[in-house]
Image (cartoon, rainbow, N blue to C red):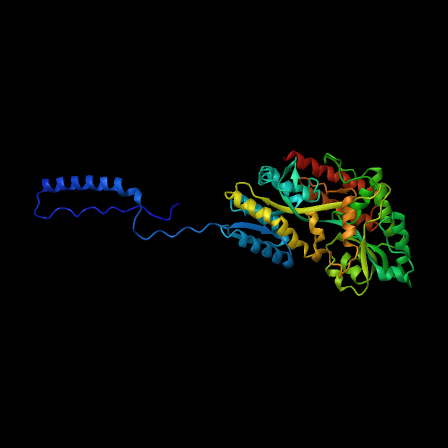
Length: 455
């Protein structure tokens, strides 16, 4: 809308009081005609009156979750965007993780959703079924977005070949180890060539017991949850995934799954060399407190925390299983909410956040795996002056070996919660591995059927 208003045509003052009614009528008619003609002639020329104030453009709203370091980094990237695009206002809207999806759903239902939103694979599946996200493929093609320069994100951020988010950063799993403890035990350092049995033997030797009490376990990993940094990888390394390839049914009751989880549980219940559930404060804290000599953990998530360690430490790829090397991989990214009225501006913000500037800035945090391959060479990320020394080789080796996503589906949170609870029962010895896996497999199949029927 133009800032200039139309000319206002003032009507001539009517006749004097000495005029007759008939004369007045004639004057009024002529006046009206003149006024109309003046309006036709001058109406489109604009008015000399003060222009109406220009309406401020609505900002592109960006909704994210994260801790304060991440929030500060988003602001830093968007500050740079504002410098390069002063004509596109943008506003960051951080939301606590626990409230994020509920708040986004409320926004969408009320028609007040943000423009650009941070998404994980589970969110994408649930929102895609509602038609709440924009298919980014046409925008990717039109702008020639360089997806080939990014790690393969599998179908974490896409459904049926359509991208609903572009990757910002991700993670894989690796083996952290206390180099000081390993050297004091006279053991060789964990190596990229290790297999399960090498891990098991080292865990036994690194476990310290005295008077019936264990003061240090050989290895620690998460027990419950979705197994992203622990038991999922044992499954993958034995050639089996949570679900069938078409994601219609569970494979957890299969022989390879039972064998993988049995091996994993034996190190807890039989060997006593892996930390049992009741002794875990958190994987990070137990490792930092030297209550475990090795730890399965996401990489590079805790590397900043581990700078506090009073011992030397490093990372290596996870040991290979009977079917070889394999690791989970996961990514989060930014998408655009459907019905967006500022698509071009939203796309410019999104592509900047996940582009070189965003990748370089987030890599400096050393908290996540940059989605763009070249960001690994960022000195702030690699930082050879700070441990772990083998961060880059471990990431490169892991990403070049087979990697698998978390098999996101509609209802993913529901069935992985069931799985996490079942794994906790198995780890505590409440149920035999085979019984626990068969029971949870049946429950997962029910969730998958319901999710499929609701689509």
